[in-house]
Structures are given as structure tokens and as C-alpha cells.
Length: 420
Image (cartoon, rainbow, N blue to C red; front, side, top):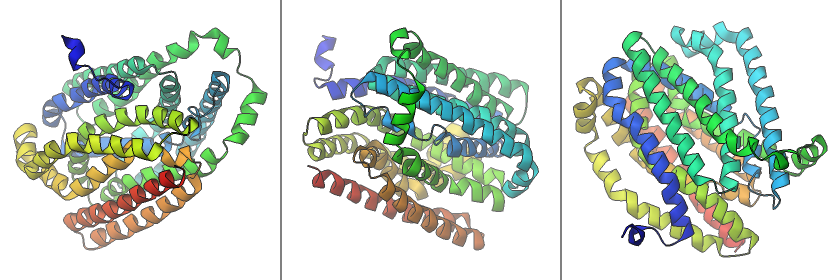
């Protein structure tokens, strides 16, 4: 009987496998959010959001973005050398970041206008290492189609995160529980994904310095263009957190972070799972000279149909939903959600197919576009900060981000049609 309800296509089955794991994983933090919002204050969430933003900014480039190249080689022995290369780079970047923080800790604390973050800056390098490690391992497991293992690692991470955040939250005030849970849960997720590589001794024996050097040169555009692109993209997305922390206060950062967390998480469950499978399938279609454009259009149409109605319902009633579920003091986060909704929807669409520039080695062009986006977002946010009006800042940020991502989607379609 259950077989009737299973998706017929391999793509849909793989997406379902990843979505099952990620849905459970994302549902756990969302489910405990009403408890967390009563244990931790908006200011605590603000410190946590700032820590995550800093880690994310460096974590995305920790491996030099070589993880994006893991899908490309036809032979696994080349892929495993890219994995080794990525892990080595991750170690060096994490150590360099530690030295930087040791030197500039006080300056960074003053710049961010947050005394509490000063202590947690010393934990940024280890968190960046775990994030970079996870990115590399995740792409290799994706290449090998170990979708169940990726899903299980994601669930394990979420369970550990929830346990630690709740346990420490009841025992100690402040953002300690939120940040500690994030660090420790990432470590557990890495150990889970590492097993698939460590058990294949034959594959590991193919790792060599000469091969890594050759592959580093072959895929040099990833650190050259993709890494700055990813860095600027993350900086651009988290720019509100940095500016709101510096020029407003941690409470506003907390409202903003919960707004993004609650609405963004369900969207990224679908986008993240779909993107992993999309990346693998679109690579195969390109190698076989198939219709990449037609496949992409079908994927996006299918996803949009699934999320548009629930998305609109949540956005329309956001303030009331936030006040009822998380407490009246969090109603403001629902207002932020309404303002940011156009941007959130476009992020979902673009994130699903963001592998396209890498597929056609157009990292340089993608980076140049991102630079323009960063500058435009900085300008509009600065206007809101200058006027000392959070609503103006959010509205302008949402508007310019929507326009930017709309053009990005248009450019993606042109890349696909030119290479049809």
C-alpha cells in the first residue's frame, strides 16, 4: 500500500529522503522555539544571531569553496583528493582566524557594540572549522548518493542542539546555551558523515599531494571567484545583523533573527534538500548533454506550487502567529517577517538552483553581481540607520534584495539556454 505513495522519479525519491531528515531536523528547533523564547530574552537571541552570522561568513569559505568541485570529476579518486584539499585549507583558515581574533578582539567587540560577543569570538575559529568540515563531507556524501546518511547527520545535529540549548538554558542565563548547542551539535554531525569516508581505505589510499596540487590548479576558479562570491553573499545576507547590532541594539537583532529563523527554516528545508539532489542531477544532465533548462524549470515550478499557499498564509498572519506561539513580546518579529517576505521567497527560489554558475564555471560573473548586490544593500540599510528607523531599513533591504535576486534568476536562465 505504501509503495503507491512513493515518488516515481529518482529525483523526487532522493529529495523526499533528504526532506524527511531535514524536516525532522528543522522541526525540532522550531518545536522548542516557544520554550526557548521563554527561557532566553530577545537580547540573548541577538547575541546568538551575531555569533552565527560571524561563523557563517567565514564558514562558507573555510575550504576555499573547493567542496563545490567535488561533484565535477568523473573519478572518485579525484573527488577524494579534493576532499583532502578542502579539509587542509579549512584547518589553515581556522588557525589564521584564531590569530586574528587574539589580536583584534577588543576592537571587534567595540565595532559590534556588544560586550557579550567579545567572549564568544574565541569560539568562532572552532565553529568555522566544524562548518567547513561539514560542507566538504556533505558534498562528498552527496556525490556518492548517501542521502540517508546526510539526512541522519542533519537529524543528529538538531537533536543534540535542542538538548543542549534547553538544558543549559534552564541552568544558566544569557546566550551560553544557544551558542554551546550550536558548536557541539556541529561536531556530532561531522562525526556521522566522516564514517563513510574513513571506512573506505582503498579510496583514501589515492590521496596524494601531487594529485591535490593538480586538482587545486584545475579548479582554481572556486577559491578565486566562488569563495569571494560566497563571502560577499553571506556578508550581504547578514548585513542587517551587523548594522543593527552596531547602531540599534541586541533586542532588535533578536527580533530579526527569530523572524528569519521561523520562516526561513521551513523554506530552506525544501530548498536545501532540493538543491543537493538538483546539483547531482544537473551535473549528470550536463555531462550527458541533456536539457538542463527544461529540467530546472520543472523543478522550480514544482517547488513553487508546493510552498506558495502556506507561505502566504504565514506572512499575512505573522504578527498574531508570533505573539500566540512565542509570547506577546515577540509580536514585533512577526511584523519583520511581513516586511521581509518578498526577499525570503526569492532567496528560496535562487538557493535551489544556485549551483548553475559553478556548473558552467561562471564564478567570476557571479561574484561581480554579488559585489553590486552588497553595495546596494549597504546603501539602503545605511539610509534606514541614518534615519534611525528600523522599518525603513527592513523595507528598503527587502525591496532591493528582491530586485537583485530576480535579476540573478534571469541570468541563470540565460546561462542554461545558451548551453542548451
